[in-house]
Image (tube, rainbow, N blue to C red; front, side, top):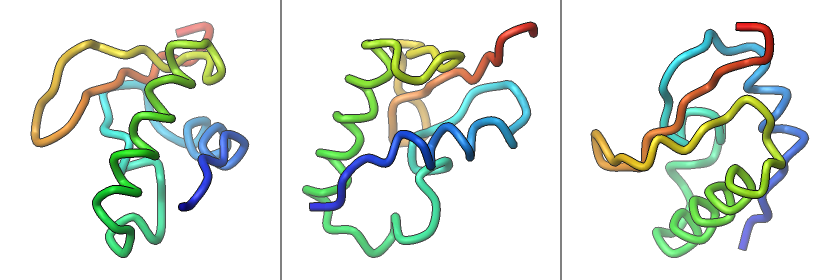
Length: 78
C-alpha cells in the first residue's frame, strides 16, 4: 500500500486557497490508479492525521459531500 506522505500534503496545502476540499484533491498524481482499498486506507490515515493535529489548518467538517468526506483548509492567520 502507498503510505501517506504528510510533508507532501503540507506542501500542497500551502499552495491552495482557503476553503473546503476532498482528500483526493490534495493527494495528487496517481490517485486514480490506486486500488479502492488503498484509497480507503489512505483516506482513513488522512482523517486520523487531521484529528491528531498533524496537519495544522485542516479541519474535519464531519460531513460528506460529492462522494467523500469534506475538509476545510484554514491556514493560520486567516
